[in-house]
Image 1 (cartoon, rainbow, N blue to C red):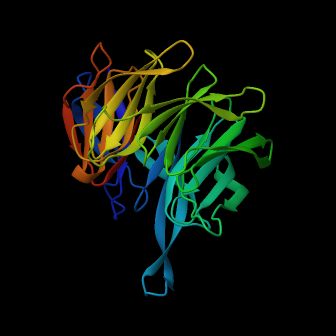
Image 2 (image 1 turned 90 degrees about the horizontal axis):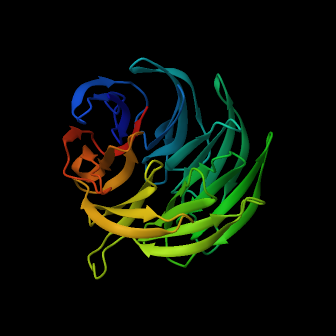
Length: 344
């Protein structure tokens, strides 16, 4: 078994910020190829050979009141040709600091969330890249700043879900043909800071991690209308842990039903087993192999967990034991500002 990983970090250059990594069956790095791409790739989305990169760019000749170059978000679309990314198109749009992007291959949609400005956008796409903007809204309120942090579709593609860290809520969007419209909201506890949502592959269940309250929510998704309701709240930290830490990312192993959640500060991964109804039980905590695990992902076979340790500039490959617990890293791959990794 060999693994091909696409990895990125918040590198301010157009070189060595997105790479194709080839690992052997022990998780050891065999080769690395610069894929090209964008400056500051905050997040990637991959579907077959279609790759979208969410990044930021300076608008030429435009500065803010302090004279700092004005930034706008950009989404760049690529096709994969071996170990390189071939540019298709790129577009700027309204917002600031796009931090998450996802592809809905069923409805052929791309969704993006802009953390700093409160903007959420959904586009249609075809074989040439993004076609047109189907939905855009700024969610800032007069007395509360919106911080969209995740925009992800459910498995059947019928709905998109926007996780807003600033408003402590999840907004559902119904996707019908060329029409995208708000369908309902789930309000969470004030100060939770919801960050990322992930859907169970077979059950009408979603898992959501919060940044500020360090909680993993188990949510039921009503198959009739797509609305979410709370079933369970569990901590991502050990009982009695008192130091500062922030929940970050989730990964789910469809083979074993285990859920993994990363903690920035504690620099750990919390591991849960799922029951038949999708509810969780914590089975332990493991070291992430570095500092500030911004993003985590599992290889398709569930043998390795990829931990993107942003502040130690390292992608760590952690072997998964038979008990589901990640072990010490078998490989540490330098990636400046490590922020994304996924097996292709």
